[in-house]
Image (cartoon, rainbow, N blue to C red; front, side, top):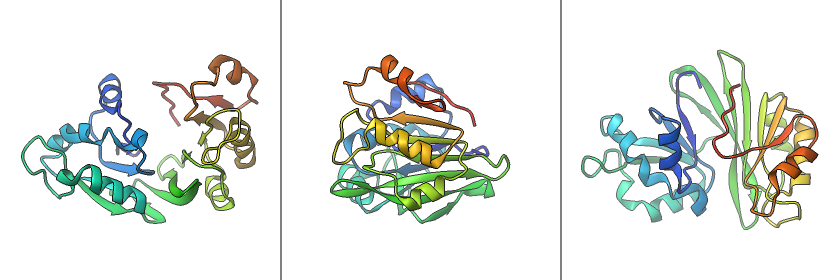
Length: 220
């Protein structure tokens, strides 16, 4: 985005994806929440700290993310690595509007219902191209505020766990309905469970709504 590489969360297989896609750098990380499938790849960012000459990678998150980062990575909560080769994270509260380095764009955030606690919903706006992307993972619904923030997006990414309802995730039908209300040019569902038959369900979705898949690359 405007030359910046923005990483959203870091799953346990983060290192494999970074090598596969040859990610050259990470400028900022946005952590939606502290669940294992979103946070356990952070230690593998240590090489990116080396590439920043030991400067900590800024991480923006909510209260839950702050607590989990401190409990899982206490050795990395510092402005520079303890020794060369270690990771370092400068963890900060995510503001409602984050202005990105170099004035290339901004990220707006909203709080999402994820059962017993909240996650971050994120909307990216790049100034030069005018492109807009909404990223709403791990949420039981899309609030009116989140809907309004995403309005006019070129791409929206939505949590869609399974066909049946779930207390802390949207079902696929709920995600499709949210995609319809937002009205983005393209909508991708993520976070599907093992019981979703990808080809069959994908073929049943309305035009403009698709299931994502590992290693999907989308240019906006």
